[in-house]
Image (cartoon, rainbow, N blue to C red; front, side):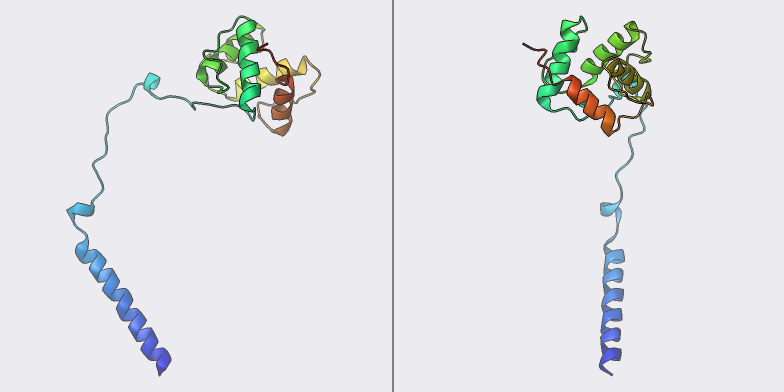
Length: 149
């Protein structure tokens, strides 16, 4: 008997809550209108920062290295944003490593170019365009030298 009473009270409560929720639903809880304006591709920003696992200090070393080799990455702030990656892409393209479009986006071609470059220093990376643990470790090791000195 108690189980039946509990089930009835539970069911009555659930129905009451549902009815109250439906009764309260109105235009005040309707979803806001969607903004359907067209957006130019230039207005859509790529991922702001992608340090590929580097600490801020090692990212600064990478930025200094880019700057000192003639590829201006923007502010030396330890945040590898689009400016830093555009500089790297320009460098990799100039070296013939085919980083692809200079857009500051760290995609497959940029990773492959980085892997090819790091392999010049005997890191033995698979050039697969995947920023896996070995690629990140090699990138970190390469940037263990203070190029900002």
